[in-house]
Image 1 (cartoon, helix red, strand yellow):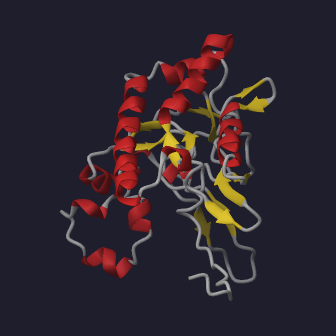
Image 2 (cartoon, one colour):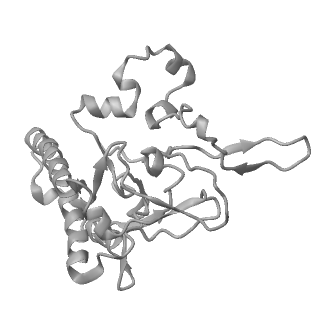
Length: 260
């Protein structure tokens, strides 16, 4: 399975040509645990009008193809054994999505990557979660990225601050890439039993009653005879540059048969 940003771009472009350019590009509904600014306001036109959007998809596709060609060369697999999944990318740390404020008078700022704070109450009272209030002067507060959050604190403290690989951005720069998934990345998934895939819901635009992105993803996985089960991870992991595979730890059953 390989991401294909050119195919993802084509999906949005076809929707625009069909007269759906003013449709909101993300169909995700509100969840009870969402922050005040939860609703994406970008239209399909807005996304496609992002500076150098098409060119960036093409650049990402070219770099992906270099890796695919290396794997084909070293393993002998062919194009017939490779399934392409429609996807889209944005420049790392230049977020495309704009979020709308709910009309409830709540003026708390939503900081990308901010994790809900655990509110500890007096003994005997129930614990709950709330979104951390972030004053204007606290915007620079350190927020762990995906790589740092997955590193043991003791190890993290021992790392010199000037090591580029300490941050996710540094690791991507070392690989000559500064790309992040625009929509939740359905390839960032977990393979379950019974030929099922657990993937993040991309929440693509809904046209004629169908999410055009998830429909394309379903069709791609169907080529391998797998069905997809979707889960919403937008504010739990996607906004901190991770998805289902990043967020999970799977225990596998070891087969009794000597498969080797």
